[in-house]
Image (cartoon, rainbow, N blue to C red):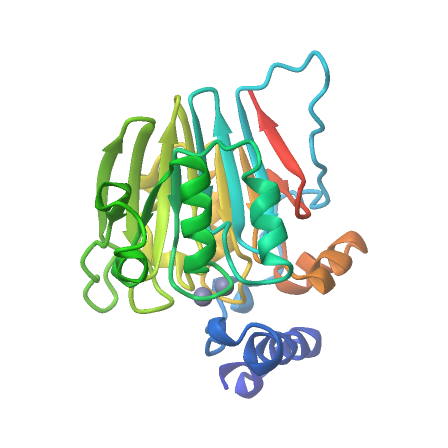
Length: 299
Ligand SMILES: [Zn+2]
Ligand SMILES: [Zn+2]
C-alpha cells in the first residue's frame, strides 16, 4: 500500500517490497504475514550523509580456531532460531519451530542434552511449535519462557515450575515498549513487549557478563529505547522493510549483529552482494550473516 503509492520510491525497492509481501503471504510464511511496514527514515533520507564512510557490508563467520579462546557462541539454528552458549549457560530463542525438517532439526540441536532456558518470542509457527518445545524441554530439563499465548499452549504438558510466563503490559499507542525482568539461576532475562503479534516479545539475555538481544519479528525498533538496552555483545535482528532497524543498530552499536529470518533466496542475494544494498543506503559496522548451523564466537 504505502510502497506503491509513494512517489519517487526506487523501482527496485518497490519490486522488493512487493516480492517480500508475497513471500510473507500465503505462499511463504502464512503465520507471519504482515502488512508492509512503512519505510523507515532511510527510505526518505538522502543517500549517505556527507562524511559518513560507507562500511563494507560483507562480513564473515569467525571459525573457532584451535587456540582461540571461546567464551560465548551464537549459533543460528534456522529462521530466527538461535542457540546462545556461554561458559555457564545454554539458551535457545525461537529454535523449535515448524519450518523445514523440524523433528530432525530438534533432535540434532538438542543432542548434547544441554539447555537452561528456551525462550519463545511469539506463537507463530515459524518461531514456535509446542510439541517440539515440549520435546526439547524434556530432553534438556530447560525452563520455557514466553508470553501468555505461548505459556497457555504448554500448560499441562510440562511441570508448572518449568514454565515461566513473561508478558509485559502493552505500551500506549506511540509509546516505547514496556518490559519486565526476571532473574534465573543462569542469568537475567528482560522481556520487551514489541510490535508484531498481540503479545510479541523481544528479549535481552544477560549471561556470564555477556549481553544478547533477540528482536524476534519486531516491526518497529523505533519504539525500543536503545539507551536503556545499553551495551550489547550480539544483536539478533530481522532486516524487515521499514521499522528503523538501520538507525537502531547504529544507536546500539553492538559488537556484532546477526541478521535473522532470512530465507534461502535472501541468503543467495546476500552472497552475491545484493541483498542489503537493496534495503538500505548504508550498512552499520558489526554485521555477521550466518547460515543455519553456522556460529560466531566471542571472547
Ligand atoms: Zn517470523
Ligand atoms: Zn511472526
